[in-house]
Image 1 (cartoon, one colour):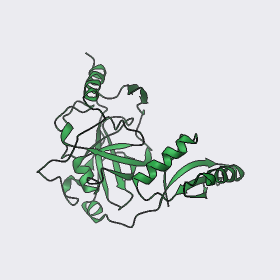
Image 2: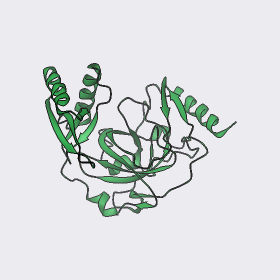
Image 3: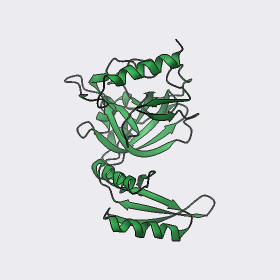
Image 4: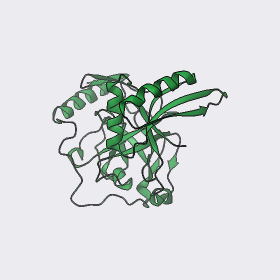
Length: 265
């Protein structure tokens, strides 16, 4: 059986035993993960694509996902989750055994393996992880972190966090003090409902959204590299995942399908 087909079969069997996705997962009773100041808090380097886990596209729960041709330039903000004991020792999409104490992650579309930096936008903690698995297959989640990675970002108890994920190229090592320092003032976070080159269109969307009691609706003006202006419609602030999810869900009901997390510069 070809590696790609074998991986898809393995993924289907794994998901068949998970309803809902990653139900009854949790943290280990013992064996603490690496501390934020340890050497394991972030080291990664470029690797060839794995033979398994990189089909042009695949489908899960009726949704089709297209694997990116490259991780260069990838930046996304959204909700991170984590997975632990239920999947410890089981095969990842690359065929490696999942180790919840290692600094790894799952992503739906990045080529495998890949190196990314993850920043918890609520406290400033940051880590580098090696992406070697697929997921999370839950609406509004952009990355699934190992237990160890989630512990360092201080998101184990809550289960989720608002994060920024940025791809890294070449060898990357996170200074241990950068991960350990953390606990920086939280950056104000919003949901971006739209972006327009015409200010009048932004004004119309903002006026329309104001009638739905989503929170404060504002327009942020940003100058792009070519000196043109873009007018972004922001709703919020959204202080936590619960508020973010609720706002995105409401916007989806209103027909706005591409709402995403935005942060103050």
